[in-house]
Amino acid sequence: MTEAIWIVAEREPARINPVTFQLITKAKAIAQGKKVVVVLLEAPDQQFEQAISEYGPDEILLGQNAAYAQASDEVMAAALTTLAKEYQPNAVLFGATPLGRSIAPRVQAALQTGLTADCLDFFYEEDLLVQVKPSYGDNVMCEITCPDRRPQMASVRPNTFAAEKVAGTTPAITPVEVAQTTGPQGRVVDETVRVSHATGIASANKVLALGRGAATPADIASAREIASRLGASVGVSRPLTDLPDFTVEQQIGQSGTTIAPDFLLNLGVSGATQFIVGMTQAKLVVSVNRDAQAPIFAQSDYTFTGDAAAFITALKQRMN
Image (cartoon, rainbow, N blue to C red; front, top):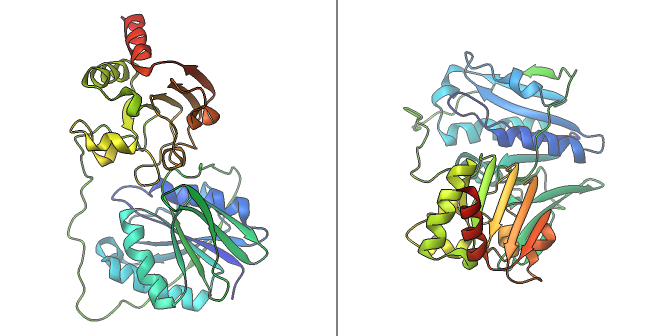
């Protein structure tokens, strides 16, 4: 068993998914002397190792094969399983993305170890990786461990942690070869970035969030006008996804999207735990709620106690 924390690099058509960089930064913060190793399986012409190097991992296990460009999830999982059996890392971390959620359980089942999904935090207690995630309707934080099996495996949603580049570091790059899985396999014919009719909130620099206290058609229309003028995306708490105006893609929270904007304006959001865990990486938070004891206020830099609808009207008038 090696004292290494692995991060599985997730490739997109033209870049590395930012969750990979976020996991590298988090792993370095909790490593306690363990090596932070990124596993990158790519086609020879992709060369994503330079982008990964900027975030300061100790080592990159680099597998290059033309077949990886169009490899199925089963093939990628089989390759990771083979490498994990050979190198025996202490822990393996994945992004809780559609790809990560497909590959991670396959690796977990093959290695007969544990896997905790959608974690909000990790930390080590000696050799034990403590994996923190909500439970009981997202109202209780649980600490989950895997004491008897290795590697310890977990996934985390994008934007749960911040990513920080590290200047002046040159990680070791170790080439690895994995025999291709035989037998009938699917392959990826094409990858196309999905275009949503909703304004994306996951990567937005500014977000205006609406809750139950700002859910009338007039509130929503005015909020969208304000967001347009601010250059912000509109997000919502879970109850508003029941309205025809919004989709689950615009939901902020543990069961929705985790956001990390520079500016977040919460209007009529009470601040349930499920919502708060999705906005902890926001840099400047302003919240409006008529309840002076609303939990959202404890997570905010600036607060206004009052009617959110009246606040929206006044703000819209001020901006005219």
